[in-house]
Image (cartoon, rainbow, N blue to C red):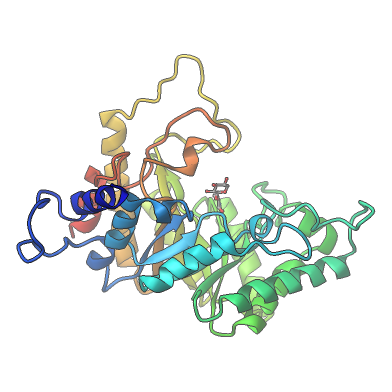
Length: 363
Ligand code: XIL
């Protein structure tokens, strides 16, 4: 029974309209995003191990994508919950799946201020750790995780979101920064490079297209390059919306970072149907969850524009990864507070391509 359901789901996703035909009568599997963009860059998707057990999602992943990013399972909190214990199971499941299906993996991430384990910044007695001890912990973490997946993970987001949103500051006032000053950033790249000299090493951040934050990130990256820190690339997360970024800001961002000799990837793409609201997301009284035709049209136009820019910038752009598979589940349904449905991806809640999909593959 389970097997039959699996085959039915797989068949209906892979060969729409061809259910019931014998294998010799089936048309070849249709092309997916990865095929249309084969001459450009890999197309990735953020996944959980649960998705890799759902036949409909597996079918969609295998048809459309050729790169995976673990959505949460390689972050320091989930993968290293206690100082002397790593939780490899979920991360291994994703890497094993990728190996079995010849997909690339982007590792995400090695150093971030969110989703950190409780033990990290404290001594046994609860007092804050010294800079020396924190850097040693960072080293041991990076060394262990990167070496475990050496040869299986081609790129790492080494440092995530270290730059401040506040225009009066360069770096975010995180525990990392409070304890180590800016040194943790360069050290994280050095540790990762020592553990796997082949891995492509990224600095990754959001709102990179907004001119103020773009310049702050540029200052940081320039300093790292000048100090000969082993950084190869910058990840634009790409948590965008119906109203941003503009074409001009997007192109300017890619080209400004590329001018430092860095490659660029879009690492967490989604196009929210709501404006950027890091500080406010609860549904307001009277507000509906409707995905209106106007929203869908605007979103389609945004996706069309973004992929046009990506193709134009292929000299610098080495990958595009979506943050989640379809509108069936998106982190934006519950970020930063639960309670409002979002529809930010190319596939709808039933895993079917949306109008935006056809614009993205039609060029
Ligand atoms: C998000 C995940 O999608 C959620 O499941 C989790 O609860 C919070 O983190 N920037 C990043 C990603 O670099 O790691 C975040 O992922 C989304 C924002």
